Length: 336
Image (cartoon, rainbow, N blue to C red; front, top):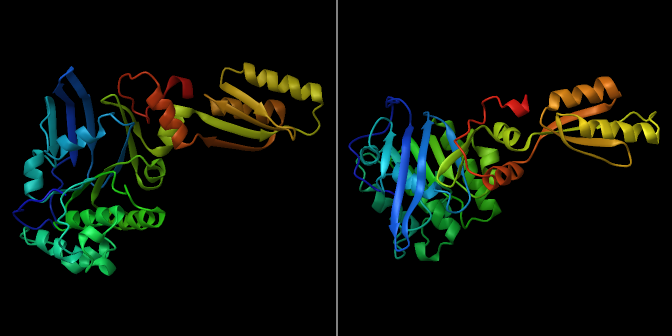
């Protein structure tokens, strides 16, 4: 958790433009084996009130990017602004708090003592009891930090991050170490915080968290933003759509075979499968055209069109050769 001495309360502040503005951001580290570029030119703008998930495989540059966003490390080139301010200035004025994966806790204190201690460093902290309740820690207030599980310690870090009532919450793998119930409760709390108008940026390996909670997903690979859009846009861009329908019962075996052959030759179809009941599934680059063929030309019924799973999209995006950043919401020639 990043702690500072803010200069005043966080209520009723102007937005000052974007919550986050990253411009041509790069970061290079020197190692014994030579220079390693962790971030290779990230451009990213996040507006106030957005909830954004940052996804990417290990080593993609997610944590390095968040570290620069928090002023924990300086970029090699490019710029970072948070509400129009340099990162350290934004933190010093209590605009930003972070929940990191490790560190920042004194194991000899109780949960409540920890929150009171950190609250004393702020000029206008939120009430301690309120923060404990919002983080789901009221029943654990008297427990020593050393006796808390990894998930409970993450909830404590979250409580500390809420103390200054920040405008932006940055979360790096916030539910690491939590069981299923604790993760569910944590995200219920985060829904409440987002409803207050808070901007939330979180990195996670749990794709279902991004799917269920984020308004927008940014996929990072090899130090670049390779996709940026809503969950539906990411799914559609990476995996296309699957069109399912039931072929007419009146078709003979030969007619059904010919129909499947024709579908496989259709330029809008990537793959075609069918079961013994006559239910056909077409992975389509042009779902509208495929649906039209099935309904009008073939006379199929019970048609449905679904996007691929986020897991499929993530694998497809991050396993492909890295290229220029992609706006997932932009029309793509192959998906028209």
